Length: 122
Image 1: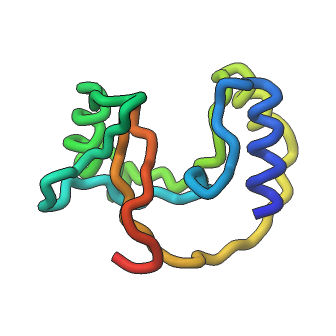
Image 2: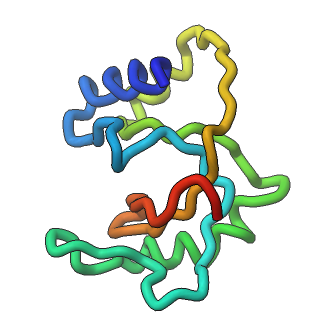
């Protein structure tokens, strides 16, 4: 967590409109995005009442476009400009180990923002 929090803080300095890691924004590795049989596959709020078409298309095409040989595992920790991310990728990266604390099912909200639905078990 300390590595993710430090990197997130750095990203937020570069891109203040990004999100802070907190109870609703946790570092995560997305292994699969799929529709599940539920009345509410996506979550909306009063502030964000609509799910945009790019989010719907992303979920619909995730398996053929992002799995198998195309899978690119990564830890999501924040948002930054492409230029800033390229600069970070040029830096020396100190490896660290981690292990999963659990599994979760999330609903996608507007612009593919994750919203936790259930925790520690699917």
